[in-house]
Figure 1 (spheres, helix red, strand yellow):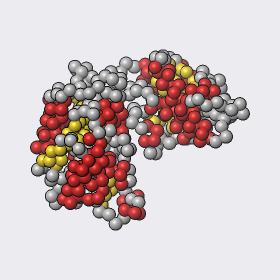
Figure 2 (spheres, rainbow, N blue to C red; figure 1 turned 60 degrees about the vertical axis):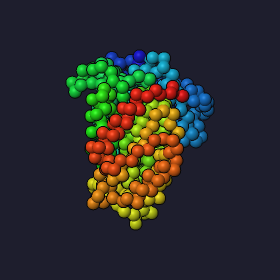
Figure 3 (cartoon, helix red, strand yellow; figure 1 turned 30 degrees about the vertical axis):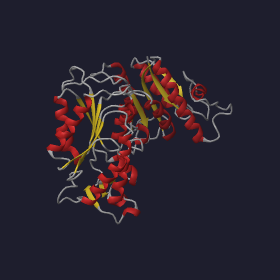
Figure 4 (cartoon, rainbow, N blue to C red; figure 1 turned 90 degrees about the vertical axis):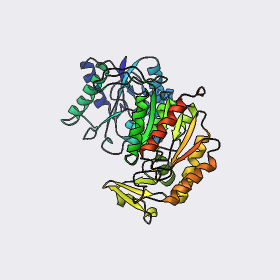
Length: 423
């Protein structure tokens, strides 16, 4: 098995050669992949750019590169992804290391995101100190900031590239403390010391700071019942990661207490998990308990970054970098209808659990987002589309122990029921 090193060898060839040689000095086998498309490669590759483009079903013009650079990058990304998927399936990939600016990062991380959790992925990227979600997505991907641009070797870039080589060498050479995730299996839980315990079925749960008491209490009940609970922070990327793990067949059941990412997707906040949020469990037919945690809010950055069209809305300053905006009754009605429809489409056991006295820590009596009319609209919209899915309203707040206990109990009951085969 080898580390696959991805770089545009016309613009980053010297730096890629340095990384390749350093990895070999560290005893790591390397396959150098040229994902460039324009100028002449600085050094020969083990896998040529022609092979990368062929994997995408595209021919690289003999003149070098495609006339539209964006088209070239997209084709190279598609080809690199297909190539790495094929090489990994053949058992030849121990890790992936990439380096580049925006184009090289787009190409290399597309390939990295195609590989399962646990496969080492390191990206040396000039964009690593900014917003990296478009490249990291929902995978376990290391981003290393090179500090200077990756143009030539100098007293700054050499030690940074050396760090990348040593990091990858350690990742592929040292035995993992715990087994890696593999699609179609459950992961072994571990103690604090890293000692393996018996494998437990995995439960996915969603949490925000404003729903922490509920999810923490429910988690304890589920773990005492013999499950391992994975908590996903409902910040967009968290919901995406959970949906991916569910789709990969790793999750036995879902406690989807905090569906707040749907509000950001609907209204235009910064923590959306995309339109497919709340669909994977339904498609796989696994048990799920769904609630409406933190649907009272849409998330933005500092107040000055809130779009002008929202300036007359009701806000709460969560901290200096996070501004929350109260959802309106009409937005809540739309959210309820969306949740009800997605629940009704589920193939497996599903239950909707609603807290009458508030959906977050700040939607409570005397708190800044308390709004009974909005909650009523949310529940009414949900009932319009939920069809035959059981809906249970509890006369308590979402963070009351009573609600947490009920949520855990309902999920445990659903887990005992037979589930359909996945499609």
